Image (cartoon, rainbow, N blue to C red; front, side, top):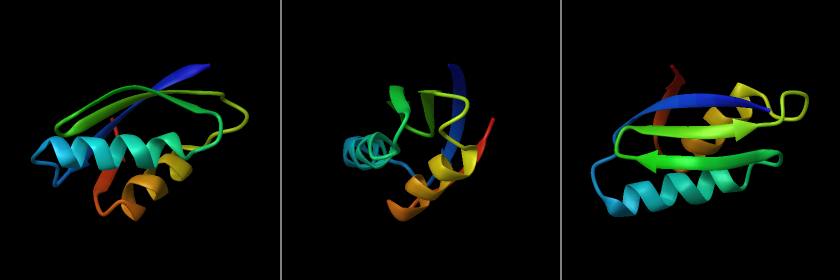
Length: 68
C-alpha cells in the first residue's frame, strides 16, 4: 500500500470535508486517512486504485483536485 496526498480546491467548511470524505470512501481499494480543508490523504492498494479514480471521485463531489 502507498499513501497519496491530494490538494483539493474549493473546500471551505465542514460539509465540504464530509462530501469529499464520502466521495473518496466510494473508491474500491482506497482507505481514507485524513480529510481537511484543502487536502486529503488516502492509503491505496497499488495494483487496484489509480490516482485518476481518486481525482474522478473528488470531481464527482464537485471539487477540483491534483496529486501533490
